[in-house]
Image (tube, one colour):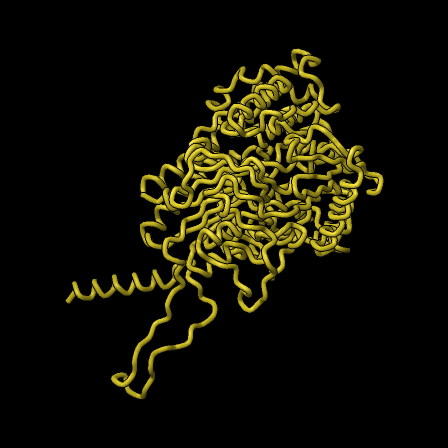
Length: 621
C-alpha cells in the first residue's frame, strides 16, 4: 500500500511538473473536445494538447558579443586567439557582408524583433529616448520578439547576460515587465539590465529579482555555467523539446576586465602598434578570403596619431590596453567553447542553430588616451594620460574600469574607417558565424550576401518551420522588416534577397542599395565627443560602390552625383517609412529631458530599507 501511494505521489508530482513547465502556451484556451454528461460513465475525458514545434525544429543559441569589431575574431583575420569561434566557422559559414545598427540597444532590439530599430521605438539607445515613435524605447505590442513566437510554438527560452533595451525607468523589481526578457518570450533570465557591468562584481537580475552582490572569477564563466546547467536540465527533462538561448556577454564593452593569467598571456603581443596591426590583419583577411584581394586599407583618420609618433610611455600603456582587451575576448571564446562542447557531449550540437556575432563595430569611446575609468568618457571628458599611466600594472583588474585607445578600435574594424556609432562600415559591419550541421551542408565556406541583424529572427523562424503569426494574443503583428538568410545556407552564389537597407544613429545616416552606399558622418563627430551640434543639411554625404570597394576606401560622390542624389532620396523615403524622423543631435539635452520626464517637479524621495535597492542611478533621486 505504501508503495502504491509512493508511485501515485511520484506520478502526480510529475504531472504537476510537466503541466507547469515554461514554454507551453497557456494562452488561447482550446475548445473542449470530450463529452460531459450527468454521470462520469457517460462522459469522456479530454486534455488540451501542449504546443509542439514542428518535427526536427532545431535548438537555437545566439552568442551575441559586445563592441567586437569585424577584425577581432581570428577566422576574420584578427590577432586574438579565438579557437572556439573559429572551430564553429570551420564547420559552418562566415558571412562577410553582415551589418548591425552601430549601437547596442538598437541592435539588440532589432535582433529580437526582426524589425528595423526605428520601427520599434529603438532608433537610439534606451537612455537617450525621445517622445517620438522611432525613439521612445517602447517596443510596441504589435512587434513581439522571435522568442515570443517560438514560446507560443512550444520552445523554452533562456536569456543570459546583457539586456539593455528596456527603458531605464522600468528597471526595478516592480516593473513593468513587458519589455524585460520575460515580456519578450524568455522563460528564464539571468541578466544585467544596463549597457555594461563590473565583470568581477556584477550587478545581476535573476528573472525579476535582484541577485545579491557577490564577487566572481569572471561574469562570463558564470554565464557559461548557467547556460550549461539550463541546457542539460532542459534536455534531461524534455529531450524532445527545443530551446532558444540568448547568450549575451558584456565583455569587450568597457570595462575591459580579465583574470591575471589571461592578461599575462598577451604581454608584448601588440607592441607593434595599431598601424602595423591593421596591415597584418588585412593581409590575413585576404588570405582567408574574408576581404577581396583588391581591398584597400583605408587611411588612418586624422584624429588618430601614427603609432611611431607616440612616446615610449604612450606606446607601453596603449599596448597594455589592447593586451587586456584581447585577454578578455580570449576568455569569452573559452566560455563559448565550454557551452558548445556540452552540446556535443549530450548529442545536441548537430541540430542546434548557432549564431555568433556582435552588436556593432569596435568602440572608439575610450578616446585618444584610453581611460582607466569609463566614467570620464560618459561625462564627455578625456582622461589625462598620466592618470591612466598610474594604473598600468592594474589595468584590467577589479580596481579599474578601463577602455582602450580609439586607435585599437580602428584596428579592430580593419579594413574599414571609424567606429561604433558611425554608419560607415567600421561602425556597423560585423563578423557573423552560423553553425548548424543538420541544416548547412558546407563547412568553412564564406557567404557574401548582404544581410542585417534584423534578418536573424526570420531566419530562426524559417529554420524552425514556423511562420510569423498574424496576431499575438489578439494583437495584430506588424510584418518583420528582416528577410530570412536560409536561402544562402547551401547556395554560395544565391543572389541577394535584400533590396535596400537604411541606417541612422545619432544623426549619422546611410543607405545601401544594389551595391552602392551613401553615408554621412554627422558633424564629423567622433564617438568620444558627447555634443557636436550642426544643422543636418550641412552634413557632407559620401558615395561608395561597395560591390567593388569592400572597405569604403574611395569616395566617388563627385563622379556620380546623380547616383548620390538617388540614394539620398531613397534614404528620405525609408526614413519616413520607418520613423527615423525627427533627427536630433543634442545628446546632453536628450539625457536631461529623460530625467525631467521621470521626476518632473518631485523634490522629495523616500526609500525604505531593506527592500529599496538595485535602483538604477539615473532612475533615482
